[in-house]
Length: 178
Image: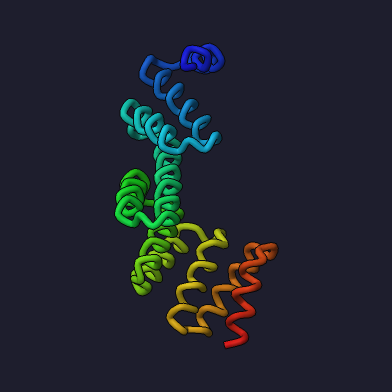
């Protein structure tokens, strides 16, 4: 398995030192695990690569995203303690990852901490103005707080960013009904 990938990626490693070669190999394996949906294995490979190249920003970003995916999966299964561990690792690896704050906001919302969730989504928005999930989730929180004007505004922003999202139209209709 690893030897096959080493052969496949071997030409990429000829211009860098052994630590960079190993880190690149681990990154590529992690990326393949991520594509195959084996997120925990991807995280292990990315973390091992980061041990060798701790300042490599692409690795920091990818491991942060993988931690976010694990956190989101834990939120969906109701394991909030595990989700919090994963999301904290994500933020630790990349404090500029808007997705991390979005998922952390989802966790806070799932736990009923709506005001904290709003603050996290607003922080995520500052980092990524083009992500439609952020205003969508803000709209959901505002709706739950019965702040319908704010929810309406957020759903409209989400639809400007992604006019094909049917769920946002449905939630917008719910606000108009209120």
